Image 1: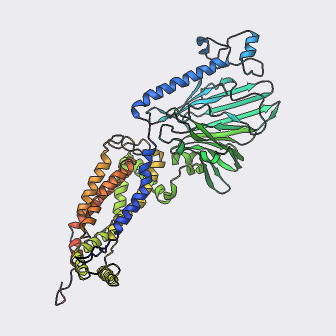
Image 2: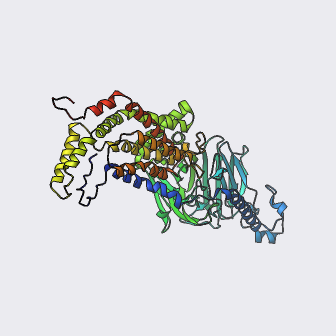
Image 3: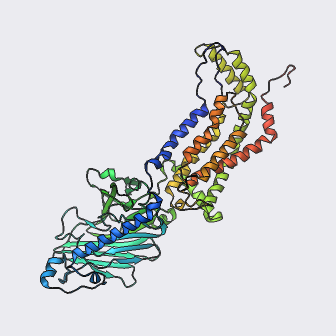
Length: 591
């Protein structure tokens, strides 16, 4: 790169222009500052107290359920309240006062124990109060509390599969009353029914043993006439054990009319519920790694309402606004319901349009192919995402080697040109910055570079080549559910920073970058600029310290491969030939 020329010995030195390496470094740091600062503002709950807090939450939830059962029936004893499918007889007066609802036959209903749907993938707990869900756990995934992942907010008073009535209201609060509960013989389904003599409600839930799909039907009539009802999931969805859980959640739907996925956060409905209707492939909720979406069984027009629910969670006492949804596809709702990980293959088998819920962001043109390649290496060869990242990084660096080799030659030439550049600087050492001859000095330097085919911005090339892949890998680690919980050697989760105060990967990355700087030809004689460039590894280590471990592994591997390539180049004849090619010609036409 062109060097800034100092003034004479007896004059104050003119301010030096910022080098291109420094400018690119500052730009890269500004782009990364958001990713680095975010973890400091959104702290995860202290790990030492998670077990105690989760236990307290479970106890509170149990007490809450017991109080609901106690208040909803004619003061049964604790023993009676635990008897499944049993109703204790009482006097007509007490029954009329205590029972909030009755079946069409006039039999009073009471709270029953939670009905559990247990499949290979789910553990779902239904309550006959409101015919709603009180727990929805994924068996193959864990939260940051190291427990099976709970997808609903058990601390909220809003329960999934409550019903929303935008127009005519039923004659009873059907989200609070008790329903008759009719389990299917195989234990994979349940039917709930309620009637107060005017309003009749029927909800049918049917699950599959080894799939993330279920079937849901709801129907409400008042005096024999069907009325519009929407199925709700409100109060939070997804992994609520992460920091800033509310910020990761979205309501969404896929509009077939314009082939576009529409996402809405809690702010969308801050002034009240927001409604939309159309020919939607699906509608529902999603966070970073999981989705819960309703797919119309017959492709009918869907109606969706988005809510903003300010609630606390089991791990966060401070209430935050969470998006919620309610959906329908007619007066009788018939949906397939997908709840599970945002796995591209899995989503594609359910519905090709469901792949759109995996949003790779503005770098999708590079991030999505990169993810598919990493996934291919994992599935076909190493069966470990950490080693797959290492292999893909090696492949990328060798594909870029021709460009890097040209840059290495250019930097070697720049190093060899420093004596000639120094002579030019000495020639103009007393020229001030505002002197017209300063332009002549710069012209001579650039002519020297052009004569020998040297790119003065060559020192920026390695960093510039890293930037697109850096952001693409960042999107992969923050979107792909496959990376969530993926381990490598001592790293338990490649999508998270190492959990210790002293993190091995970032420190190793800093050391590797120091060594790479030492191996790279120094193209500037200015000691201040050299010291600044040697600070870069520390700055990058500071920035990477709380980024996903997989991203640090990528950068570390890239450094190690670059070191090997630089060592190889430094020990080839090409390096010496590059240096000799810029030597000034001696008298007689020989160098």
